[in-house]
Length: 257
Image (cartoon, rainbow, N blue to C red):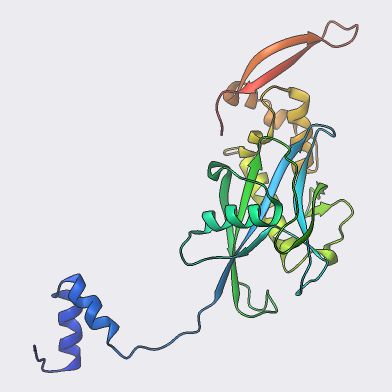
């Protein structure tokens, strides 16, 4: 057995000279400080284009258990140690809504570690944002008593997202703040990479683009998004609008954004 002149020499040897396997074996036997471990959850902002209203809707579940019993919440839940956060997001959405989401549609939004955000204890959540290209039916399961698609509006000054028929006090946990972050990210994407265009159906009108942009920004921004036609879209058809000579252009995306 190897001996060392001091604990410092031993530590230096295993950290810098030994093989990694030798280091890990040694490390497992050391007296180390113990730290309280937080629970980790995922919360998911799921958006889809409603073809009946021509507006974007937000998917929420109504909780059927404490804490925040009967409150509306973003679909989500606790992370399993065998999965990453995207896998957990997809699994939890399916368990609570029976909705299958393509991993390519899921982006990590933010990590929230605000102390006291969950009354059950120390809980860190990783929020995700998903844009669906269809408007699927959902069915409640697991922790959800109900699922429902909601219309919403965005305050152009604060960028807070206001859900039709659901006051902020009826949103569970800190989900109003997560929704505000999603709104901010979407607002920033107007100048960088407007992934919200992935919400559009396979063939869409320019009016649909303007309507969604206005819903997300809280104001009309036609000039700001005019360049999208050339950058991201292909004209696929034209029709006359009523008895006028003004063409109504239809488009498809060149590729998913």
